[in-house]
Length: 147
Image (tube, rainbow, N blue to C red; front, top):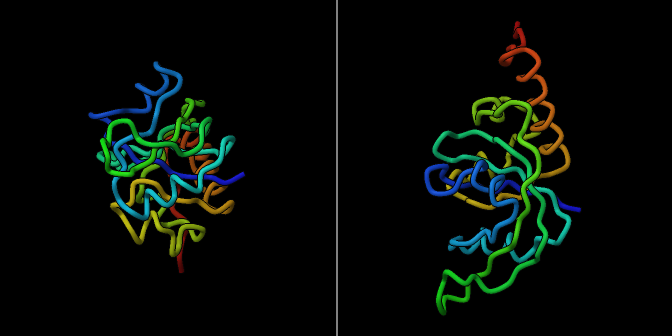
């Protein structure tokens, strides 16, 4: 099972929208690398929904249908996947917090800021979900002392 990060502008389609609908086609992705990532997704893969305008991870989802022709991209040869809403993260995780995590060093999320479908390594997934727990429990991040 793989893990992914799916970016969306919350004004166009938010995690709250996904939660209300329970399931949606993740359409409108045109970037060739993001399209390749969509084609690699398998049913059962996990995803984090990331609000790009707010630059923070907010909720979990699961891929429930593998790549098929994007019905919103007439004749363009683009694909989409279907995702199902999972739980909201215990607290949103801001991009700045992810940038400080060693697991995200070299990550496509950091290197390619405009990439809308990003693969996550197991270490990145673990770091992101652990950060959500820490932020929820402490009300924020505690910076490590550096001497």
